[in-house]
Amino acid sequence: MNANNILPLLPNDGAFNKTTFRETVHSIYPDCTEASINWMLVTLRKQGSLASAGTGKYYRIPQDAPAKKQYSYPHSPEYLDLEKEITEAYPLVNFQMWELIQMNDFVNHQIAKNVIFIEVEAMLVDTVYELLHEKHPYAMIQPTYDTFYKQRAPETDIIFQKLLSEAPSPDANHSCVIEKLLVDLLSKKLSGSLIERSEYPRIYEDVFRKYNIDETRMFRYAKRRHLYDSLLSFIKTKTDIQLMTI
Image (cartoon, rainbow, N blue to C red):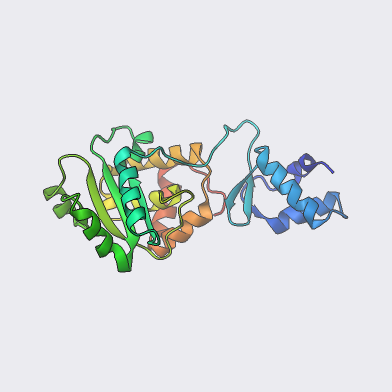
């Protein structure tokens, strides 16, 4: 059995699920076992012919398309020090982090002054803030837009916020996944006010062009933040992104 024989028969205009993949395999190899079907699926993903569009959803990658990879970012020393402080003091606390300079990979106007966002589960955000505030007196907890600009630190700003209970979990350590960051950009809160809106189409298009994006995870989080319609409308009207799951 050759996994590549399946490719021409799979949908090429959007995402499909494993049931579709199984039915396609059986149309050529009627006696194929479930184990062999799983092997074919893994093989096609490893060779870059298929990619995940979310849990149990896949799409074909054109042969001439540039290879995409999982998003990761080499965080700043300040970020890593803060992450270590929190982890050592509260090893069981649920928190996530990201920093504004991550967006320098995608924006035209480079961000000179960094902001580190620390999102902590609601019941402990005050506790963790108090832990770091003594050492970092300029740290702020859920500041308004005006308060943020009145009380900014001389160097790196540190912002504590509540972590939504249904926020997607980090892929590594405590670094927010890129799908979460894309949704948060569209919010009208502080995290969505620090980059010019005119930069957003470029950010989204660059992210989708370079990295594997779990659209299911992204839209699920957008729905949790009441940004589903805004996200879908923005992508469809302001970018050239071709969504695979919608």
